[in-house]
Image 1 (cartoon, chains in turn purple, blue):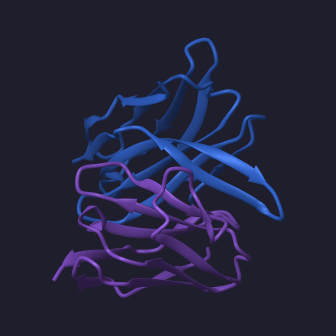
Image 2 (cartoon, chains in turn red, orange):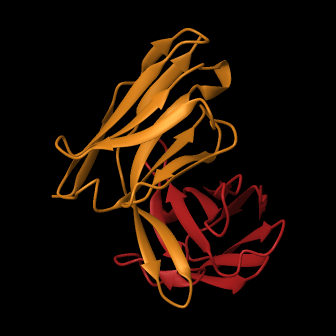
Length: 107
Length: 122
């Protein structure tokens, strides 16, 4: 199975900060990569698919980039609603696999 | 309103069986790809299974041979039949719609989620 490794596992940031999360695949997944946000006690929410396509309704401060084995999720200006855990997911090959998650906490 | 509502979770002994349901409204489980994702307490997300609109199914290695995904068109409901349950199957189980895009590549997007149902194996 393809392993997805996110870094960092957690980070502390302030409102207004630029935040970047990295996801690395153990082998190439083209651009078959999505990003999800999860808040405590809630189901995940789709943010980005195809590595860089913003899901409808998601604020434009979220962006994604990358292809192959290295991907990034960037929040251009962190807002109070953005403190959450973020997961990448590869849907290139079965079994689909999530990264272990990155917790974005308030500094 | 498009909605997915899971049910069927509960406490079961190791080696036991359980069937989870995911009732859909505002969307057709037969016309969409549908997936199950689970999350052990305090842990990350784990993809479990998917069923395509044509009926093709795929499973995570950890559940292959023990879990079966299916759907009932008349009830517009997705199911996950779980057998030979283990302690490590303890998790919140979410169903989600998998909207499939075929563009320059093929992309699976879990865009609508239920609230989850908790399975405890002990």
